[in-house]
Length: 119
Image (cartoon, rainbow, N blue to C red; front, top):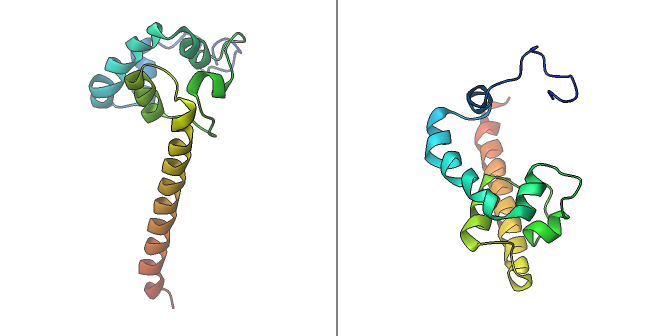
């Protein structure tokens, strides 16, 4: 946003200010602070995270492709030491589909619980 001129403040935000905008201090120190320094060991991932024009595709970097990657994906990537292998790709898809079904069913349950209150 700073580079495109859309940042609302005339001065650049400090690292601390950016952290406080997106996550609580406890989350930062418990998780993010320990994880992000490890990214420099994976140049392809680093370029992808920086949205570099030299970055590889999602599939090449992560080993699988989804709509959005999250912090859990990053943590798992670093724990594995790199992208998923092809044999693991099916497992990821099943895992994500199963989670979506769980999320959908819990939403349905919430609707059912709240529906008796409607007249």
